[in-house]
Amino acid sequence: MPATYAGLPVAEPEAIGLSTPALERFAATLSREIAAGHAPGATLLVARRGKVGFARAFGALRPDGPSMTLDALFRIYSMTKPIVSVAAMALVEEGRLFLTDPLSQYLPAFAEVRVGIDRAELQREITIHDLLRHTGGFCYGFTGETPVQRQVQAAALIDSRRDPEEAMAALAALPLMHQPGSAWEYGLATDVLGRVVEIVAGASLGDVLARRIFAPLGMIDTAFFTPAEKSARRAEPHGFATLDAAGVDRLSHEAPPRFEMAGTGLISTLADYARFCAMLAGGGALEGRRILGPRTLGHMASDHLSPQMAIQDTPLLPPGHGFGLGFAVRTAAGLAPTAGAVGDFFWGGVAGTAFVISPSLDLFAILMVQAAEYRERFRNLFRSLLAASVL
Image 1 (cartoon, rainbow, N blue to C red):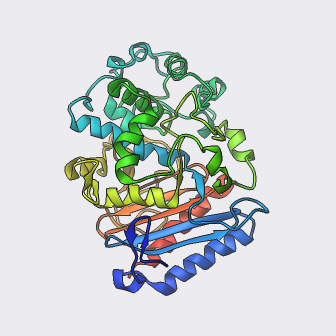
Image 2 (cartoon, rainbow, N blue to C red):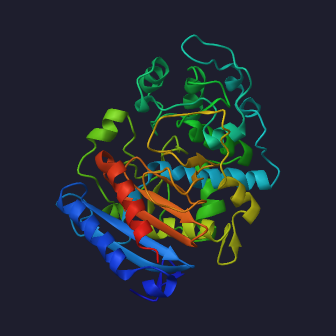
């Protein structure tokens, strides 16, 4: 490897507490998964102590296409959420937004939202805190078969062709799954948060992210669309059947979409997301450019779920984990199906992308892949093989 990757220094694995044999096993496993037809290709990065110890591309960029490259563009889907959450917390640091603010202060229609199929009245309003930690009662339509989820699915809200104001009005007309603050339910909350960020900042979400995060961090390829001149670098899956069945937008845009979806809409690269993760691992700053204060970031990477809250049954939040403000957080050394350290925070995307930040190990890692059908398999491999790579 060169002396730097993604603008970060490169080191021999053992010099930063990583195991070369374990990383090579990690690489061999990814190659095996690709050979088995589970994905056309992938990219992987592991960094520790501020230096990159491993960065490699595997397989093909697309089915029957050229070799995968380290600058490939991937649909990161829900790995958009942590980026938008950081932007929202930057507004909190400026005193322009408060976690205790009711959502209706920015989007009045949500003052009248109802709960459940029987349309019960709100016991309390949805807050900005609820949006960040997924306790506002919003859901996804494709994650279950309850009457509320069926209504959300039928409304087809995950569609970048929609007008954002119309999308919010349509969502406010639907019932919530739960009373605000009573349960952790993964869903459309971050899309609502993105609209709040636009209103508070007085600009489109893409412009806010570009100005506050992408430009300062040098994330040159991350956006809500892929310009035509970059389309040859686009990683593609074997097919879209799983995403289409879930009603998930394919994000095939060559120009900014009407609805810049804060929950699922970004395209990025391994290098760009490495710079975002390096900022998180650095306590909110990278190369002298501060995006968030370290205490704010520490607050985001802490568990914000109370013992009284119901937790959605999903592999997204396994035992031994809670949820902060934009990230899942490991709260116990045991219980979970994969190894890790207490305080690790992470998230992933519906196409299989994943990242983890480990403050106690001074480590971060990223997997980029487009394989929605095998996303849980890739995530489990990622966490298990990463844990085995740390000396």
